[in-house]
Amino acid sequence: MANAVRPFGLFRNLNAKIAAIPMVLTVIVVFIGCTLWTVIYSFTDSRLLPSSNFVGLAQYQRLWGTDRWNVSIGNLATYGILSLVFAFVVGFILAVLMDQKIRFENTFRTIFLYPFALSFIVTGLVWQWILDPALGLPKLAQDMGFTWFNFALLGNQKTVLYALVIAGLWQGTGLVMVLMLAGLRGIDGEIWKAARVDGIPAWRTYIFVVIPMMRGVFVTTLVIVASGIVRVYDLVVAMTAGGPGFASEMPAKYVYDFMFQRSNLGQALAASTVMLVTVFIFVVPWALYEFRQKRR
Image 1 (tube, rainbow, N blue to C red):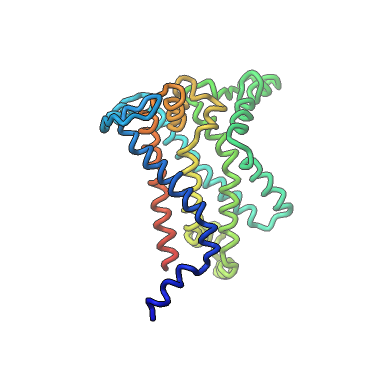
Image 2 (tube, rainbow, N blue to C red):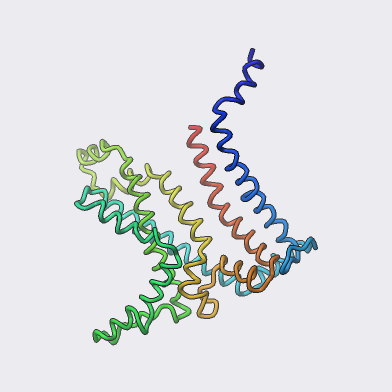
């Protein structure tokens, strides 16, 4: 009887399964296929066009022996750590303030989230102008008589990364705030009533009760923000073009330059594979966490 029923199960929700065919084919061909192609050809000596000449780990040895790549990895680590820390802290504080049922909440939420609607190219150009010593904020401060004010971040190799962090936070903190606010709105109000009855301060309730209950929100936000950090490219191109020198070079820009400007496909694909592995480091734990939560 079970064998007789089983074939009919294939035809359940047939319209939905047919509608999902393009998406499934896209995933198989574009995502899985292109990923395998990238990994395979990263072990070849491909230049302008793909080559089948296998060279083993030569491209990876050259990659990690290149100062430019090592600098870009260090820059990405610095940019990523600062962006994650400040985005989470500022985003959570803004979400807490928004959760106090303030007036004009929708207006403030729109204002904070609006920069996220802009492309990183626009954000980079705007902040390049703001931080320009001859046109932007430093020039305005000098004209107002604050001759001691020196905020020339873009032209200094030691401070250019901080300029990128400021621009990135301006655009992305609003998204973190919205995600955190959604998590806070999902907290049962009875918890706050019990905390007030027991005389527990609000900050202790947030740290020891609310934040642990928002673990899923924090994990999801971490994956979204971290994957965007690994792929950061257009913000760098618009603001600094990787300069001065290679002080603000990023792995994504390294891949683009070697693929389209230097016609070194094998080296670019090796760098892309390293970036892919880095993204998997964040995505796989998140997927396992979500899967376990659903099973529970």
